[in-house]
Image 1 (cartoon, rainbow, N blue to C red):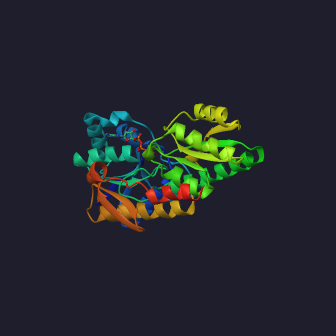
Image 2: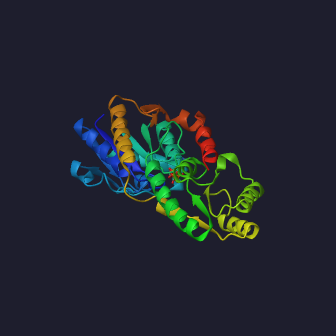
Image 3: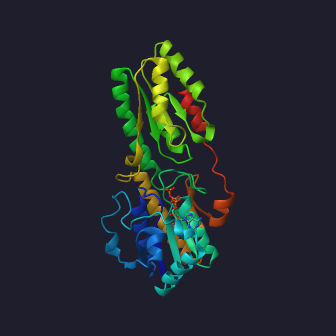
Length: 319
Ligand code: ATP
């Protein structure tokens, strides 16, 4: 293999830059040219593709976001659009593509692979919702950001005898909420995988207040319920001031933590190793502390993401 491409897609995640850097530098060390694609599948379709030199990825390992840019480009679901994208890549002489993104981005990579253009997927998302890996690039940085935010909320909750509801990202995956909850000592943990019984939550919070508890933190994943409305209902039942804080996009940005930089570097380098061995159509993961790769189609279609029941149980045991 002589020429490969790399793009970042979907929501940005801290560590994506470190992954691109690792792809570029590993490839160059093997005499393989690397082409960077701007703004994900959108730029791939618009043929915004440029060769990357070693220094193009200098000074990036510590930067959040993705210097290549990312985009939502639903049109990539159309086969004709993907065919044009493949044509663009072939014009540049590219033989394979490394896609760094979440499960939506993996779908694009799967489709390209099925159309005869081999892709390798790297899991880049703060949500930790990608099959075939224990952790995604960006998850641990986001976890630290959430912990920092909850620590601050705890200070004001305990000073003012308030209840705080913290809405945490993760789409339909509770990992960020569960681990932030353990790390911050939140009292209640509500995640999409477990369903949501509002009445039972409010009753328990109210019982705690009756028993003398003066402040509480409720960690809840996005999309489960309207947290502002929930805050009003809890306040009405408990008499304690209750505020909802939606952390939002502050969770996506920031300097990547050590774990994400190292993980991204390992995964980026591994992707190029696989391609140089002629292996394509795979997605890279880390499982039980070992780099692994799986068939990208199989990962998307058949690989369940086991719920972290042990960690979930710990949230209530220690609350
Ligand atoms: P995150 O989980 O962080 O938001 P993601 O990669 O899941 O990241 P999506 O917006 O779902 O984010 O997907 C990114 C892009 O991948 C889409 O904008 C689209 O271009 C492409 N894509 C998604 N689904 C498909 C599909 N079924 N076929 C082809 N391309 C797809």
